[in-house]
Image 1 (cartoon, rainbow over the protein chains, first blue to last red):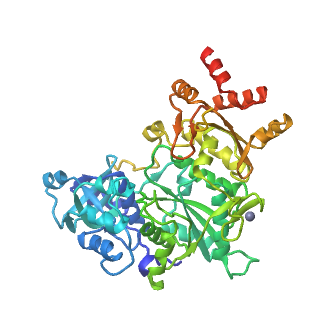
Image 2 (image 1 turned 30 degrees about the horizontal axis):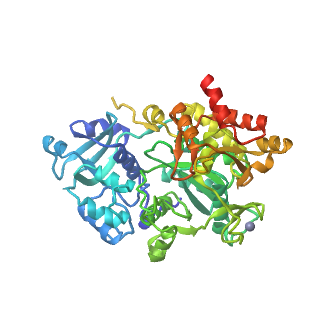
Image 3 (image 1 turned 60 degrees about the vertical axis):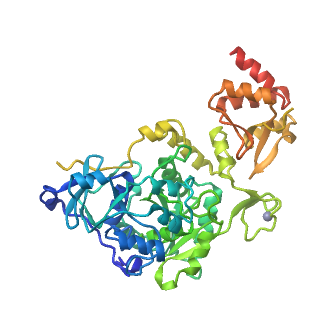
Amino acid sequence: MNYEGHGNREIRERVIPESEVTEKIRKLKQIPVSGRCARECINIAYGFFTPLEGFMGKEEVDAVCERMTLADGTLWPIPIVLDVKEEEIRTKKIKKGDSILLTYTASSLAMMEVEDIFRLNKTKIAEAVLGTTDERHPGVRMLRGLENTFLGGKIALVNPPEFQPPFDRFWYTPRQLRKRIVENGWERVVAHQTRNVPHSGHEWLMKGAWFSANGELPVEKLKTGILVNCIIGPKRTGDYIDEAIVLCHQRLCEARYFRDDIHMVTIALWDMRYAGPREAIFHAILRTNLGCTHHMFGRDHAGVGSYYGSYDAHRIFDQIPQHKLKIKPVRVLEWWYCPICGEVTYSGLCGHSQERQKFSGTLIRSMIEDKVKPTKLIFRPEIYDKLMESAEKYGFGSPFCTEKYLAERKPVFKLPALW
Amino acid sequence: MAQGCPINIWINEERYNELQELGLANMTEDVLAGMRVLKLQCTEKQKDELLKFYPAAKFDTATTQSIELLPPETKEKMFQLVVKNKSLKVVREFLKGAKEG
Ligand SMILES: [Zn+2]
């Protein structure tokens, strides 16, 4: 089994064996962490963020901002930091060299060796990573919302998360997923990053990327798979509910729009920074660690508003030396519906640019809100039905996040009480 | 007639067939992959009355330039009025019915 991840480093799990946990954490000072830090702890511990072994120190963050690398020169675009209330550090007398226990939702989460305690210039990070300091940018708001003191150092999970239905069957750690990829007989895997319920535009984006990735390989026995990797993180009102996103992607396969031997749906925990090109590199690294060989990038990948050019996230890969990143970007223009061609087609092929009809999230959303089933060239009927079923089952009647959903939804994962 | 604030009624294949049988299909505009729309025109005053009646609805000036988030049943009623009257000018009658409960 090949467990080599990003930066040519082996993917190792940093999880303390159950039998040793009680003794190890008994006397540790406890620090509660935010939802984002908890998700990132889990990612570090299972190797989603290989080669990271913990939260970054000051030197590492500076290298990421200034050179887009870790301190050792490995390509890395986004700081991964643990912010803590100044008061916690002071009152609990936390100092370099301490071992501490990170807690989340009043349960133990991870042990941390404190190697650095520091402050950061948030404006400088925003400029370097997001390319803007505009408070309307959600990534800037997220940065501004961080506490002002940061802890750097290696972590190890003491309490593995228990994923709740319907997410549990879609949760694979990188090592588990790599095993599945080998069992599937896939030599190439093309990743699809998503936070959407798939319409036909997304379906064709995936199909087109599969053709690109499969390239010159023999076609009698297929050895290329599509990995739909749904991002689970904080939600805003109006977003599709998480349960609908994963279940609708799975439905595309169950309803045979994708063969089950070339398609797989999984989830990853990640709080989007909307960093456009830098986030595209991050997504490429994440999927490298998941065992993907290719990653599709469409228009406006991981962008927001008009902060980035539509294809900035494609162009940044031109600046990355080949040996720095194992995964290959598959660059995709737009899929649209053409009434002249009479089909969903590709803007790089169809010349009817005057007549073309673009897939618009706003229009499709309006149809769904009105509960008028879209035509099957927009939304597969099975997907629409699954979306409405998910709305009833998980969304308090709505396929989109409402205040009620955000307040009362079931958690994606739970940390069991340790004693 | 204020051109500025229409209500979009989505027309999928089923609704389109219904309109075709009544000879009303040409009232629709093709929007995306066979999905059509009927644009019901509202006066400024009718728009204000509708928004008062349905507090969750809003006039979306940013993207669709239409009155959005009306309850689906409301839009279904409006569609049925179009079919009954064979006309897009149904908002007045709709509001009258709504007020009478
Ligand atoms: Zn065409």
